[in-house]
Structures are given as structure tokens and as C-alpha cells.
Image (cartoon, rainbow, N blue to C red; front, side, top):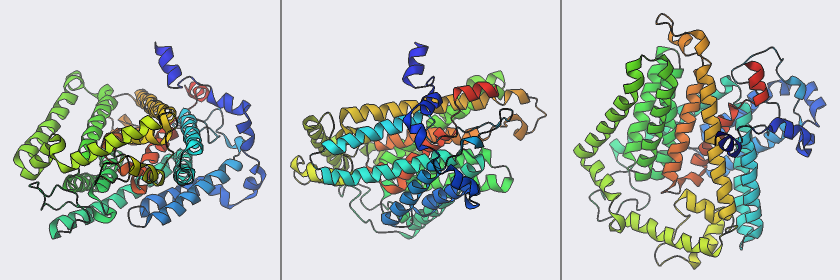
Length: 491
């Protein structure tokens, strides 16, 4: 059974050998001589890191067109790096690093599944009943996947990874601070986000620079996970204090969005984060705390959430509306959209209608019920099936499965890497937990689960502010990958 699971998740795939023997191998490095003579390309990964940081620094504050330009620049730069890849720059055989990097860009199982998913979507685009509209969505998806490829490459450097996360956290802090200002000063809703008959119809829902409270909640889910990790990763007390402020400000701002999908997402993200953190530190804890630390923490967190829902009336009303079925206008709207989307899937089951909201808007009016126009399927699973059909959906689920498995394998490797340092009480925190970068990986996995949970009931995942974060999680997890032969050599 274990061998079947490893085969399914590509854990034993000799990907490096396959790449070296495939025609793809010949696409890597034709500009190698130019790169060796270029002074600028000596800082190739640092330049890529700056491009990635620009995306996260500007995405919440600028229009989508500028974000698209930045993504195109990232994709073009990744292509340049691939064409000029220097295989001779690999690490010496006697040099050890916690994250040695394969030299080819397509060198992880996650890359392989991303390519497979893109291929399925490309076929769906060609088979679409609205090919021109689907081609627009295909172009957007291609930009995001090229962005993923660059992220997975440059984040192999722990220093660049730390800078990218810091830039995102600082941008998220600015977004949250403005959201809190909207709460205290009051702000007009830009759309009908709450049922007019609901007791919350007069309640302010903050949306900050993103213009939509549900979108803001989706943007802040990873920010909370990474700011919690930053409390432990950042070393000075000033840095830790800043991270603690980020946790509080981001959490409060997310609550004040009154986004039910966002609340579901953050509950799932925090739950996964606590589970992985408990596993990460369990080898250092006394026997009592190994057994009871997780139940105590989870129980306390659940008790605090239940108490807040009972005591705070707006929270109680909003949580209660989740179980109102069609009695809540927002629920009723989503149910009607889902029913129409299911009918669309029945008519296009194998390859779907093609990617993107442009294709969706061409087909959906033929199926929608009166007064229930929509921009998308309001569910990531239905959206993927509708866009890429059953074939694309299988590739998508396989991608998620492989990504989580690779992330778990990396956590196990980094966690065990600290054993040689011992666990004497006299050791400093830095000595006892040498692989602090593993906490960023834990935050990425928790964020991925939280974003999926939010995406099950909302449409924010396809907006640039959140979609760039979505592919950041995949790229970050991929950046920790070590080929089996290199891992064995290091051991």
C-alpha cells in the first residue's frame, strides 16, 4: 500500500533522470555561454526575487492591468533563466545545504503536475464552444503558472524566501491597518454584501484597498498563517513584536470583513497550522506535553471562538446565517448559481467550457435563473470541473495531493535535521531549532488548506490579489524539494 501511495504522489519518480533523457533537457541552457559572460546575471536569482517582491508589494494597491504586466515580466524572466541555465553551477558533492537545488527549472513532481494541469486546460481551451473567450482565460492562467515557475526557482534561496515573505507581510499589514480605519471611521458598501432583511444590514464590512470584503478575507488568510510563523522565525525581540502585531491586526481585520467563507478558511488554516506546529515541536517536548499540547491548544482556541460567537451579537448573527439555507439571500444566490453550473457541467463534462470568467459569462446566461447573474461558479471545485472538465479536475486534485505530500515529506526531513543538535535544556532556541525555514513551509501548507476551504464557497481565488498568493504557496512548497539521489548523498 505504501508503494502505491508513493507512486501516486510521485515520491519515487526519478524525475531528474527523466528530464535529462527527454527532449525538454535540450531546451535548457542554449544561452549558457551568454550568461557566463554577463555581469548582471551573476545576481540572476536576486533579480527574480525583486520581480516577485514587486508583485506582492503592489498587487493590493494597483489595477489588475499592472499586475498582469508584472506577471508577464516574471514569466519572460523565468524563460530567460531557463534558456541560460548553467548545469555546471551545481553544488559540489561535498557541500551540504538544507535546501540543495536541482539545476533544471522543471525538476519537481509539483512542476510535472502543474504542466499536466496546464496541458489539460490547453486542450479544454481548444475544445471550448467559445474559443476566443476561453483563450483570454488561458492567457491569464499561463501567466500565473509562469509566475509559479519563477517563484519555485528563486525561493530555493532561504534569504530570498525570507525577503519575499517579509514584503508580503508588510503589504498585508498596510492593507489591514486601512481596513481597521474603515471600521472605526465607517465606510459605504460598494455592493450589496449583506441581506437587507438581516440584522447585519447596517453593519460595516471592511474591504480596505481590495474593494470587496470577501476578497480581503481571502488575501489575509495566508498573512495570518505567515505572521504566526514569523513570531518563531524572526530572531530579534523587535521583529517578534512586529510579527505579533501583524497576527493581531490581520486577524481582527479578517473578522471585521464578516466574510463567512473567510472565517471558514481561517479556521481551517489555523487548525492545520496548529497540527503541523505540534508535530514540528513534538520531538523536543516532554512526554506530558507531547500528549496534551495539541488538545489543550485546539480546545482553548475552539473555546475562544465559541465564546466570541455567543457574546458578540454580529458574529452570532453572521455565523447563524451559514445554517439558514435558502433563508439567507447570499446562500440562496450561491445555491442557484451552483445548480446552474451543475447543468453546464452536464452538457460539457469531459473538457468543460474553457478557462476564465470571459468564457463563463458567454455560457452562463443560457443556464442562469432569472435575477441570478454571476461572475463565476462560486466554488473552486465546480469552477475547475466547468473550465477543464473531468480530465482537468483529476489533474487539479492530483496536483493538490502531490503538493501536500511533497510538503509533508519536506517537513519530515527538516524536522529530523535538528536531531544532531541534541535537545539539552541549556541550548538556545536557535541551537535547538536549526531549521527555522521549515516554519515557512508549515505556514504555506496551512495557507493552502485555508484558501481551498474559502474557495469552496466563494470566487475570490481567481482574483489577482489572491491568485498570486495561491501560486506562491505551490512555488514555496516546490522550492523545498530535494531529488532522491541528492538527498541520499547528503545523508
